[in-house]
Amino acid sequence: MSIEQLKLFLAKMQENNSLKERVLKSSTADDVAKIGSELGYEFSGDEILRFSGKKVGKVTVKKNDVPGEYN
Image (cartoon, rainbow, N blue to C red; front, side, top):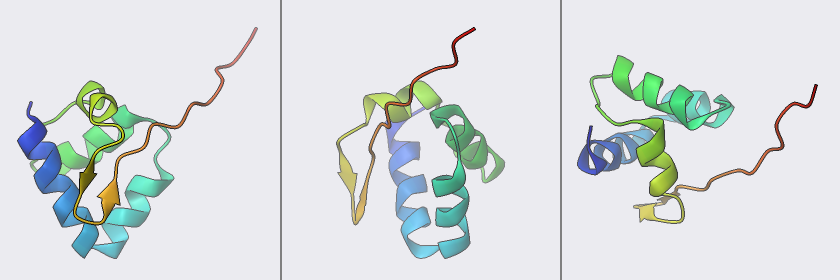
């Protein structure tokens, strides 16, 4: 797992609109990490969250605070 891998993935996402759409439709950072894994990138959802607020090219990683479910 690596921040460098995450940066490479984000750079690729800038060039690939279908990948960008998949990422934007993802619900969690772990979902995005799974997409990255399918393409050969190794990073975790936790690494994405720690990268929040930082930029790679035109992409800014932003954590969305969504309330959880209550039972």
